[in-house]
Amino acid sequence: MRTISKNTLLTRSLKISISALLLLLIFAFVPQEDEWKAPGSALKKKNPVEANESSLIAGKKLYTKECFSCHGRKGRGDGPNSATLDKIPGDLTSSKVQDQTDGELFWKITQGKKPMPSTKLTLTNNQRWEVVNYIRTLKKKKK
Image (cartoon, rainbow, N blue to C red; front, side):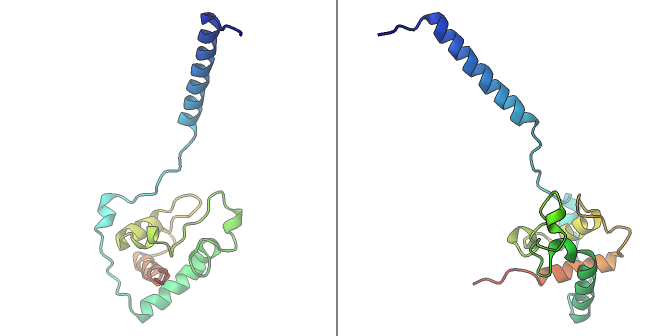
């Protein structure tokens, strides 16, 4: 039977400790996917545009022009350009999106976050609210 010296055990323990430390350091510097949160002021912002037929028609038209290529026809993040992006577009039908307030969605549509462009200069406030109203129609139906 072979005996292991204290020196060998210490060397082995040291190697394991250094390896564990290196792994921790590596993971500490790997960018983590951060959740996209709107500021608190956006949560309370109320939608001034009624979700009536004309607003929904306008919202759908704007969605088709501004959002369809990445988010897709039904808002699932499967648009024709989605495969070319570094990040998968959000599924607008999901509860993660639909559970957000209108103000949060308005803020995100306004600000954008790469690869999603800001609409601050391309859509009016009213148009962005119409897009929010249309996004609400994409909610998954409960089975």
